[in-house]
Length: 386
Image (tube, rainbow, N blue to C red):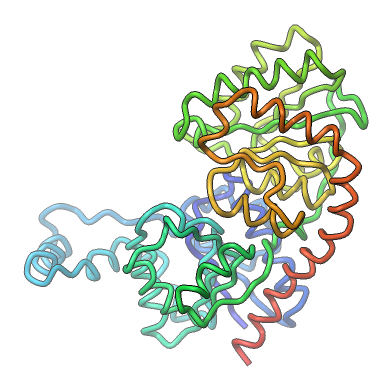
């Protein structure tokens, strides 16, 4: 079986890396002779994922003004309101590989949470036009994300694998019959443990991850996060390990976290982890923390899967759904409007510390089942291509 993953922006987003890395591992583990390829918009960043059989440059192509393609595209849009010719040229670096594949996996997890995606819709259409199997792999989608156009695209898929029950129930409720429940493949990702940095208190470190994406959506949250860090320093003896998980230009956790580090380093209880680690190495540090507070979903998955009590600075259905599947309720997840309330952040942190043993026990019971659901995705994939 030849499989191509697409809709991947590159591994400077360690969550995207975690999806590709873990998915490749479980597919190859369960499907004899499977070949897994990745179409990436930033292929140089994906060389670290050594189990892949190939990485293609899937960067988008420009259509030069007044070129032949520009004239044809303009005419089709003007006369027929049809963007397919233009989109086919823009996405050709992905589309040209479809003919060589058996299955195309649209990955990324929350790609369908951010408005219309006409380029990916066009790729999906081309996959089905060539008679290939099309799978949406480990996705989350909220009610606010759905549109008629997006629903029409979702109906093209042979299989939609949702990674938590909220998205599963939503899509089934919309009449989609091609939906199955699994879990994010990253729950199964291995960790790599590097040397602990100076100042790390073994068994007494709280990790903290914050992102520019959160700040842009609620700019008052930056001050509330600062107040939370002050609260931790004043009311506990824990070390805080600032943990970046995305280091892309314009969306770089490290830049935001460095400001907090610079402000609090004089306490001797603030560590800033490097910005050049891979997903397994970040997981290696997160797994040795006592608690974790995170905005990036896959940083929190690294914590959950390592049985680390976790507080989520959530901004979409995925955070709520994953927590609900682990705890039976949306435990310790704050919505985008709540995270500018410093008192609420402090109260949730205190709750996490208070209920530490209860949270760990619940994760010990549920996380093994979640990991089994991750592998279930491969079972569904195998059934599809029988």
